[in-house]
Image (cartoon, rainbow, N blue to C red; front, side):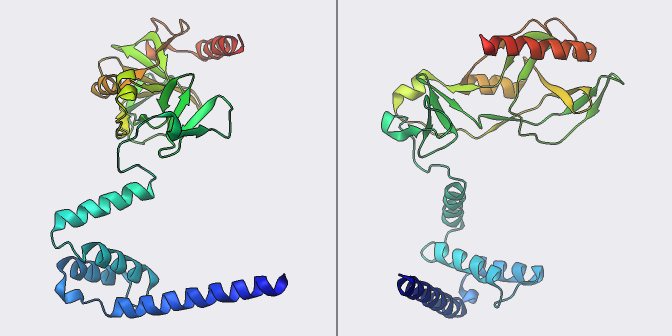
Length: 264
């Protein structure tokens, strides 16, 4: 048994050595002068500090050479790169069907199913939601202590509740889930949308505790509602309160209220 494992390891090393050896020969034989994009890549990589002895250099040149071999038009090369980027990000390059055979049971739950081709789509009780439908990109941060709005430009991977406001006053509605529209599911032809960045206000209640607020007439929110069925929920804890007037007590009451609901 040990001898078989040793032979297997030796074979793997030989294959790896031969692959790297012939790869270097292939790179050396690439005629950079005949390809404008390869020339540009070579110059930029050289300025960056990489040369033909560098694995990073060789990998980049090999990829560009491969995808531009039969494509002399820049647009075709860009398309190929776009496809490669999608595949690396595990984004499908053809439409999803959203049929039963495209889902498998999630490891975390027996009643939750994940799309095998695009693991940002989950199915739960005959509904399908998208985990990356939106992200939060606050334009402002509001400190409860100073009551001032300050510019803010950090993207957040926000997974908690997003609160709706109208002219700075909370409406009592919030959401954290976006469902795929029924008509899109029935069509059997679904192309995932790009993640929508919601530009809202990060409301600091106290250190490390804050909520995210967004105006009901926000263009990005309207676009999100056009693409998905937003799962709006209601909670009267913050209703009719100006975002500048939210207290720690209000926040604690909100946490208690949603805890009670989740335990019902």
